[in-house]
Amino acid sequence: DVVMTQSPLSLPVTLGQPASISCRSSQSLVSSDGNTYLNWFQQRPGQSPRRLIYRVSNRDSGAPDRFSGSGSGTDFTLKISRVEAEDAGVYYCVQVTQWPYTFGQGTKLEI
Amino acid sequence: EVQLVESGGGLVKPGGSLRLSCAASGLTLTNAWMTWVRQAPGMGLECVGRIKSKSAGGTMDYAAPVKGRFTISRDDSKNTMYLQMNGLKIEDTAVYYCYAGGLGSWGQGTLVTVSS
Image (cartoon, each protein chain N blue to C red):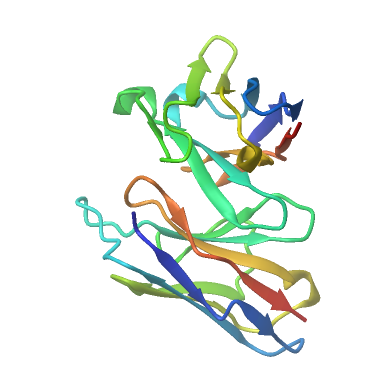
């Protein structure tokens, strides 16, 4: 199975400041079709997860444009340009290139 | 707007069975790759199983911890996906979500508690 490793696991941030979360996979996430299936999810307390970014850098409709994703191969990053209060929660990366899909441990964003 | 609504969770004894449902609206399940994801209390997310779209063969895959005990199926007439869980173990206690990968849509989850 592909192991996904996130860092940091806890991220204290100040309102209005940028934040960055790293996600590394144990093997390349480039699929045989040439796409890289790495997604980012946000989970606010008591809520279902919500997808923010799909295929590394594509923002979902409804996801604020302060969220951006980048990376390639085995190294990926989620960035928040200016943190807002509503961004508090846990962020997960997940690879859906190969089965079983695997999630990172989660990064708790604390404001 | 896509809506996924899970149901069927509850309290069950070890070794027991439950069937979860995921009813979809705004989305035709036969055209979607659907995944069951679970989250144990205070823990992270874990994929349990998936069913491919009909055009991709409609086959199912399972994660190792549930293989041989859990079965995913789909009723196209009801636009509903199911997760049949047999031989439940205490470590299966979790909120179970259905997830439509292509659209990134999640249900609200249903809690399964396995306890004697």
